[in-house]
Length: 241
Image (cartoon, rainbow, N blue to C red; front, top):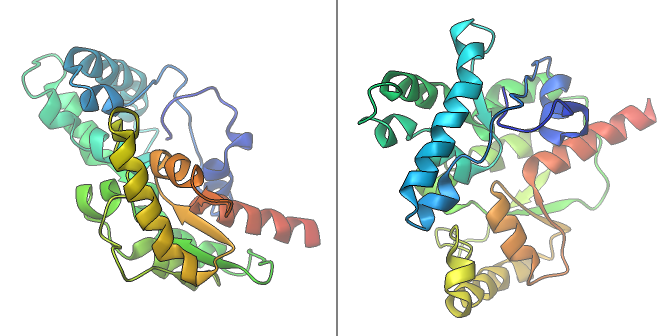
């Protein structure tokens, strides 16, 4: 299952990649924002409203056993949804459901060890194709998922480099930080981009939409979600068949 949106999964790179690995995707049409942006703004009441709406949208699929996991392709959403149980622990009507939602939530990168064996041999690469990977704070610190994306993309034949200097530091996006503290946010962005520059990468890839948008604002090098480059490689394979 994927969060939110209409059932237009054919246009969704994540759904296409999962489909190529024989994993069916269900999109819950009534799901909405995960609530993280409102949490950043200390608007807890609105955030909790969104959380309850999502639980209501996802629960019928969970209760019926139709889904095995709730997959997040934005690491900022993932870290928030995994904490739904804690956020709604005080709500007797939602506490148990929220806890279960958190237990079933997976960042997309957590599926990679199972996806890679099914996708190997199906991806084609343009040459050169050097990817510089930026690990979002919400992935490496919030969810403590480190090294998996780089390792598994390499197994698929991509050439992935992670800059050594400051790899653990924020890019400056930080939820709403780039809006509320733009001067500091752009200094952090430029510092991060300067560590990528010596790599001369064809693209910078990340796992969170906030990071992707923020980094792209400071460079002409394409900045993408890592699943987009996998989807593009699969599409290239299909074209060559």
